[in-house]
Amino acid sequence: MNFSSKLLENAVAEFAKLPGVGQKTALRLVLHLLNQEKEDVEKFSGTISKLRNEIRFCSTCHNISDQQFCEICSSHKRDQSLICVVEDTRDVMAIENTSQYNGVYHVLGGLISPMDGIGPSDLQVDTLVERLSNDEVKEVIFALSATMEGDTTIFYLHKKLKQFNISISTIARGIAFGGELEYVDEITLGRSIATRVPYENSLSR
Image (cartoon, rainbow, N blue to C red):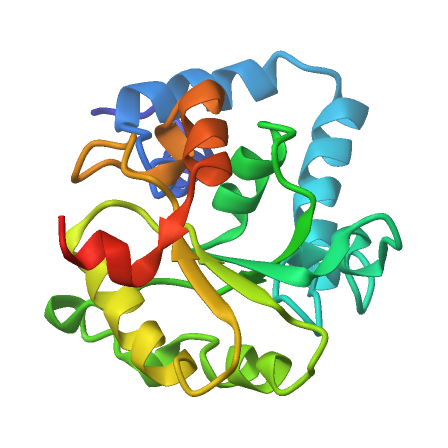
């Protein structure tokens, strides 16, 4: 792709680094910004810069937050005895959109994937174990994607957590194998949480 401006070329190259954005889409986005008022573009770039510099992660569950503790962990209306373990913030958002869950979360920050060099030590596993030392926790729900990486992570976590006197369950398999949690429709995901089953039962299927 030939550019008439090095500044334009550099901007397109940066946008093209975003997931799912090719050069043509990147060029369209950059040209759109060039057609906007200077103040609007500055506000856009300032918002992104502020996001990167000031964003925080909840000290309890590791969800993205503006404060030390996220709104979910801080809410007295949430059931603190119920922890839903998810891969990342997108899964928290997907489950929250179902309005079928009133507990709290624990964001692992990824899944175990030896092929990608991601092991248990790269995830927020130790802090999950620490949370279970609190007698307040009664149940842990594994709500991870129905993929090989998701199942491997669940298997590992179950071995780590079975020492505690808690219920360990997993969302019902209304989700096809290979499905990413964030792309599941709200009704299916909501039912999967509501009809969760003990993890041991899921192994016999």
